[in-house]
Length: 391
Image 1 (cartoon, rainbow, N blue to C red):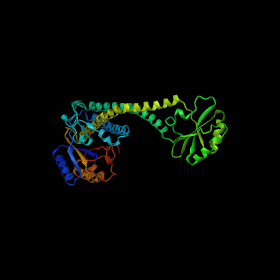
Image 2: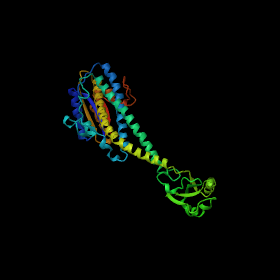
Image 3: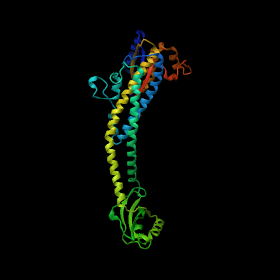
C-alpha cells in the first residue's frame, strides 16, 4: 500500500513499552510494517506560538499535498504519449544518506528512510523561520508551475485545434492537406472550380448528372480527390455566373457544395503554423518535463518535512515539556487491515486519553476544547500520508 500512518507517543518508559507492544502485535498479526521516524529537536519557543504554528502547518500540509498532486497530474499531461513511464519521473531525488544524494529515490523509500535536511531547513533556527522557509519555497514552486504549464497548455490547445481540423469529416475538416493547386482552375475571369461532397451511395448519380445540374458546366471536369466513411469530395469546373444556380440544383440532389476557394498563401500559412506549433511543443516538452521532475521532488521532500514538523508541534502540545516523544511510521499491509490496526493502536495507547479512546467508539461524545472532528482525533498524535498522487 502507498498509505502511511505517522504517529507519536510520549518517550517515557511506560509509553516506550506500549510502542514495543504495538510493534509486537502488528508484526505477529501482519498488520503493518513499522519504523522509527527521526525528528530533530527544534527550538520550541512558547506554547502560544506552537498553537499558532499548528494551525499554519495544517494549512501548509493541505497546500503542499494539493501542489504535488497538481504537479503529478501535469507530468501525466506532458507525457501524454508515454503515460506508462510517469512514475519513473515522480521521484524524490537524494535525501536518504549523504552519499546517496545523487540517486533517484522512489517516494516510498524516501518516506521510510526519512532524514531531516539540516542544510536546507536548519533545526537550530526558530520553528517559525523553518515553517516560513517551507511556505515560501512551495509558494514559489506553485507560481512557476502556473506560468510554465499555462504557456504549454495554450500551445497544446492551439495544436489540438489545428489537429482537430484535420480529423473531422469532409464537411468540417480543413482541406489544405487534401487539395493541391492542380485540382483547380485558377486566375480565370470566367471559370471557377468548386468542391462538392457526394454521398457514397450517389457516386454513380453524380457522374451521370453533374454536367446537367446547370448550364455552363465544363464537361468531364469532375475528379474524386478525397473520401471519408460517408462520402467523397469531387471537383467540378463551371462558369462563375452559374455558381448560385448550380449550388441550388446540387442541394436538391443531396450534393453539398463545400465553401472553399484555393488560396495558396493561406494554405501555406496554415501548414507553417502546424509545423511551428509542433516544433514549439517539442522544444518546450524537454525543459518543462525536467522542471516538473526537479520541482516535484523538491515539493514532495518539503511536504514530508512539513509532516515531521506537524508531529513535533502536536507532540509538544499534547505531551508537554520538556520535549520527549517517539515518532513511528506505520505502513499498513493492506486496506482490509486498517480497521484492525486502528483498534490495536487505540487499545495500546488508550491510557493517554481515556475520553478520546472511548469517543472513537461513540461518535456522539464531544471532546471539550477540541476543534477537530472525533474521527480525526486519537489518544496518540496521528497524521496520514497517502502517496496515491494520481488517484
